[in-house]
Length: 172
Image (cartoon, rainbow, N blue to C red; front, side, top):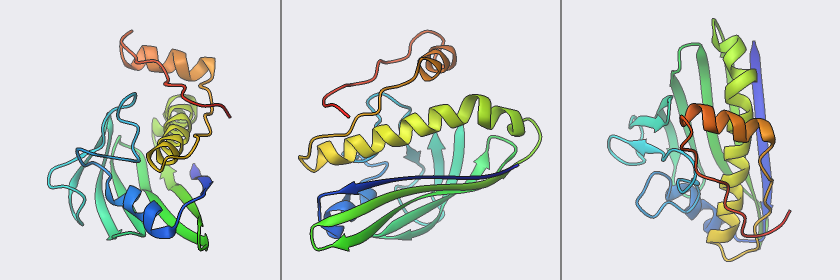
């Protein structure tokens, strides 16, 4: 099954400010990835091309990295996830940028079922939480997309009842 999943958020910030968010990924002071409530993004040697890592059960390596602009990760797991996901900063005007997350893959085997039933709802919630964290990191009011009951239940199942609640610091 072909998957093309794209999330975008307009952010009142310069392209360099949004680029710095991408550059902070997987660092101790990560300003984009919502590690406070989702599995932390980790790599064996920081955010550099060919670094290997992932988050939770999702495994990948850094395939491309343009500091201040974009980073692309190619999947190595779970089995049946064949493709990539990426963050891209796009300048719309001097003080308005677009933060985009693309996930493009072809699922095979069990992933044909696990992607739409389990991984997609969790992925969509995680990325929207990342965008809210990006806004908060820049001192802006975050647009919060509340988790659905399905996402809450899946998180409890995956975390064996030890899921952290969504942090609501603003309104959508």
